Length: 139
Image (cartoon, rainbow, N blue to C red):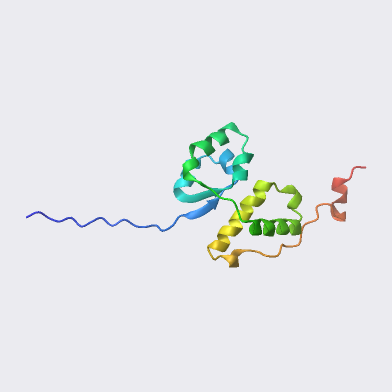
């Protein structure tokens, strides 16, 4: 009589966590391929367009089918722009920076995590206040 083997049960780890990446990940991450296995990796067209480093461009091309490219909705971009203006960061952020943040905002909203979103900026830091005057002025 032949013995019947029980089917192996494999654990379903559930959906991968989402990781939204900017240009630095393509440039500096030592094991870019491992991110693709652990996370659902998403970036924007503007991040890909911002790549100048040859190795970073090669990584982006080599792993193209393993990450998604998405563009945030305009309403989320507008919220990020308003927030950045409120913190005083607007002028120092690139389009790619703001799109990455807008995409993160959009995904949080889509996943029902509005409770994790700050809607009002903290008071901006004035780096050129009177207390810093001696640092920025030369005599």
